[in-house]
Length: 394
Ligand code: F3S
Image (cartoon, rainbow, N blue to C red; front, side):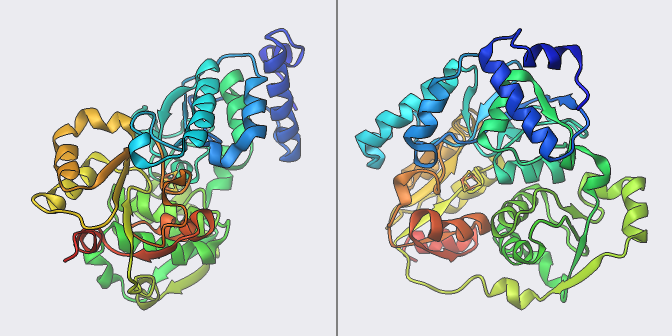
């Protein structure tokens, strides 16, 4: 690989032994993927933030590193809220380990903004190179914001944070961002009344077909929250890190992409609306969980409108980024008055909160895909309105 003087100095250990090791990780990665050089990244999102996923081995590795981040870097959701975890019944032994993980990252200069929606709290512009890790955040950054990031693992993201560099390969290169599979719907009219949940269910179906191919969707008109839901689900049921929606997502409107959309012989797959709606099967549930990915301000407002004046009759969890509180305190107050629990910093999958709790209703295609394997629960998919109805015993 071509190295500039800073890269070479990092590898020579001139910026410390920890950064030297980090650069060696990035160099090995670059060689595997035939990268020609390193590029600077604007921000980093580090995964491996929950003790549930990294365990003692991960904690020990973090504790052995001695360097600070040189670019803005933030965390994926951790295994519990930083405050109020006792009231949620998180075991003290887990909390103690999680606190050690948090402190290890803070020592490395990683901001404890623990969310899968860092794009609500950092400026990301089209064409920015990032090193993000959480699959839904990667999908949103690439697809909705037009930024460029591969899906980093915990060590490679941390290495990017401590050096400011990443190898240039994969989705950092424009020609690798072209679609490879085109999705059409058999009844596009039916999507006009769809909510985030139906787009999540579409993601469950489409992701399983796409695998790791880049999809191009025709004939749908999702808004930003619907795109978030669609992309998160495709990243879970498949390995989709970038998708395009014709005429909606930024790169689908570029002349370079349009030319290829027109010329390339894409595999075309028609998805039946009935198949998408099949994801919404009836099932008795014991809890409701929404906020996967973490809710936007608009979504918090909608949840508050629906729960206003009602009482929940079963555990009802609302997952957000702690940083969202400042702009939605009144709405969150309405949600909490209903008996629902607002849970910041963590997620329904990486915390032990939902583990083996029976059957859980969600409006998220991503949670629907992950809850069985990660938490041992049976998932039921519903719209937000249905989640509120069931959660309030109506
Ligand atoms: Fe976020 Fe966890 Fe869902 S990281 S996207 S809330 S599975």
